[in-house]
Length: 256
Image (cartoon, rainbow, N blue to C red; front, side, top):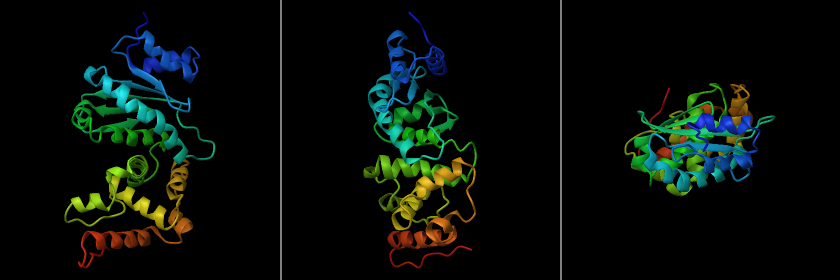
């Protein structure tokens, strides 16, 4: 029996052997139970390997809960975030390991906390890996403001993948208590801002942002070009609307 020891090796063996993406999943039948679970996306264009060797008890969840979601949503993410001449990575890996924090992405590898998955298996675990899969597709190579990089990933997660969870809308904000939103606060709050701009000004704003960031050309007048308003103007308008819902009757704060 051929034994493939880790995620990188699984994909390397497959591509070195010239296997098409449709055949890569067959490697699971010749590997041991601790090998990564490799599957293809629904469009047949990407192979994803999930390595739970550090937490074998998560293998069933990875195969039957996470994999079906990513098989459908990775192609959707790629379709949401296109740009001229770009093809989304045809393979990536998710490695479950002991680590602090939740998850992070480096190149085409996602590293996620074993404890986080255990704690959030029936909560935010799958959504957090949809977020990281957006980073796989983004491929900005360190370019662009971090609030936009993370805001786009959470926009896809909370407003496209799981809007029914209300994880970044006004219902979620109301749970935070006394706070004032800022468009560049990153993650969910910036995702809310991006969604607001897409609803009120330009429905393609996230696609257009992604294309510029990926090509390393986020111009100072980007927002003016696409909405006829500057970023601070949009931020103030959005904040005032959020403040009116968060704190009815209260005079909203102003920022220099």
